[in-house]
Image (cartoon, rainbow, N blue to C red):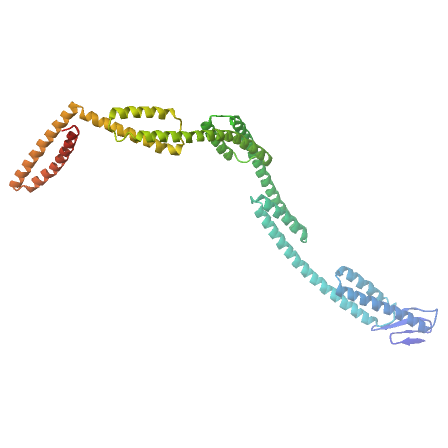
Length: 409
């Protein structure tokens, strides 16, 4: 019979292992010596030690799931409980029990971590849903659309929640995106309709602009082009391609008209500058008639100058008031000379002036007498009132006397 601290082999070849519960049969050995039998089963024990050590390391250093770890522990525990090895099997059971406790602890940790991750994921998805619902009301179509697409990618990167919660949040999230897409589609459909209306309106404006491009009715046509431009701005924008093409045609028609008008106006401006020189010469000639010494000769000379003036065309608008003012000044001087001559040669007017002067002189003399009488009687208030009336009558008398002098006395 052979033995060691953890096992023995009896004379029949039966192999035993010592445990805290007493000896347990390991197996039967008939093919060799008892020492060889013990060595064989000790190697089996060492194999179990190695396997348990590897499992401990995996549990400690990898993300081995609790389920897989427990399956491996159960498999090793079965081998230990079957007593097919010689060694300290009780120590192996203790290590397996500790491993179970470690796995259970890791399971709880993972459960807590998973709950925390679920809460974080729920909060993150709640935030995504809230933002998506806010964006659904936005009119910033490009930026809001880009942000909604980014939110989808963020959503995909988050862990799933329980099916009910995840489905409810996704439904709200998806509904917000659909609402935004529907509003954006309606907006751009309306915009397309507006642009189509703008295109039709601008087609008409272009047609009219092109029909006017050969007009030589410069003033009214230029005014109409300004009205067409106002209508163009009020019509809104058409689709980009159509807008660019229509604008080029519209602007081209205007350019043709205004280029032609510009050439005509340039020729007219040159002609008007020459006309100004001629009229300035005539104004200078007319100004030599003032002061008027010979009314009949001055009148005839001015008539001749004026006929030549009328025969000359337009002058530049900004120069017109000055040169015409010079002629009007000469004309007024001749008219004033004519009026003076008429007053001197009109006997009826002279008689009326003399009669008026006599009447005013009598009134003045009468007032002076009344003032003297009032002062003598001590009635100063009446005298002051009559003095004010005298001032007015005296002013009229002075004016009448001046007029009488113009008639030569």
